[in-house]
Image 1 (spheres, rainbow, N blue to C red):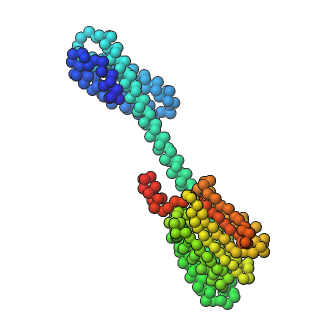
Image 2 (image 1 turned 135 degrees about the vertical axis):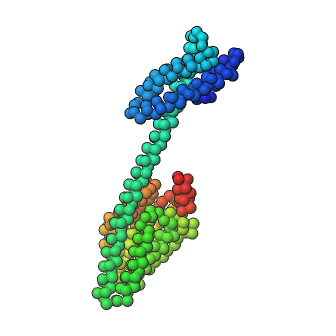
Image 3 (image 1 turned 90 degrees about the vertical axis):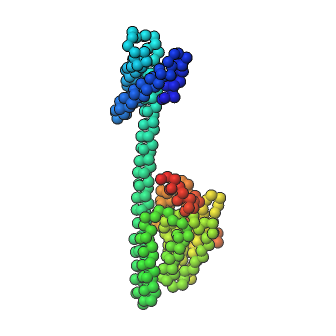
Length: 338
């Protein structure tokens, strides 16, 4: 505003006493803007359209401009008959500058309100998303617990007490890990693989050596961020439908690699055609795959791939592709957001 004020009084600089007159004019405008501020603030509290807001501001500026021009003339020239032509020029300048000041004030305040509203909506969306993800994750825990306790019961009934005791200890450690990670939405792939290996150890105890595992994680993907509890439900699905039904057992392969800026993870079992036809129809709609895809959709919208494939060599393969982001990059983004 004050830059515009200086510009508006440039034509008068050649007149005698210009410095004093300019100083008085600027101070008068400053006082007028201070008096208009509570008026603008009061107008902003009303549910007015932009045009209505501007028209009311213009009306106040017409009054404030007239008073400012009169006071400025009085302070500069003292008490004398009013020169209407000179006063009209000063009045026009004062009204215009004050109106521009009010418009700028409204623009800044509306922008701030819009920014606060966007932040509130983003926070609300984030809270809804987090609540949805937590609900989906809590759905997995009792499902796994039921299956594990059922397996322990089977070992006890078979008279294999050492295996049942070992499996109870493994299940306890596994559940402790789940509880420690309940508030984490994403975790480094290295931690997710270690967590899944805990689960595989439980299943190897239950299946008495019929389960074999092959884990091939590309080193550059170890610190990639993935949804917490991404692998375990998929691996459980593969064990249940691709290995457990076979007398000779089978192999679970977990692999990860980079494809450009995408992280690709695959979980594959070595089931033959019999296991495929008997088990995979149910697996395709089971809680593990359905829950995982729902969480991926919630976290990444459409920026992910989740596919169920049947390789020619046999077995079933689940492929997940996610945006490649490192844990360190996520911390930098959060720091900048604060």
